[in-house]
Length: 158
Image (tube, rainbow, N blue to C red; front, side, top):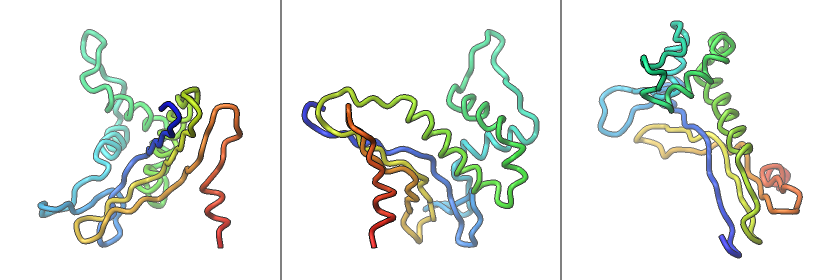
């Protein structure tokens, strides 16, 4: 990125059916709604029924990504399951997890450019509507400079 800028977009996705059910979506070519995000929903359901940290006999995992998601969800499953809309809260909490991991790994020591972080939740609405993006983080970072919160700046535009 010599003399250039870098854009990093991040965040989970969630589906919403035509009826407003969060956590499912009717995808093109399918006759019924399916989970969105399937990995988060699967991890949440596994934790609700008592999933514990299961690995193979040699201590390794068969699905590192899913194990990570389940371990994270297991810390929040009780709180999420008590929510009025658990799938909506799961999407928001998972955004926070992704954001925290992203912010823990960002580095601006790459040249004179800016690092632009755009984070949020992609909302899948099915084939009749385009996907939407709910921005929650939009900022510029540059080595030796204060972070510029563009989302805050956008909210002040009238």
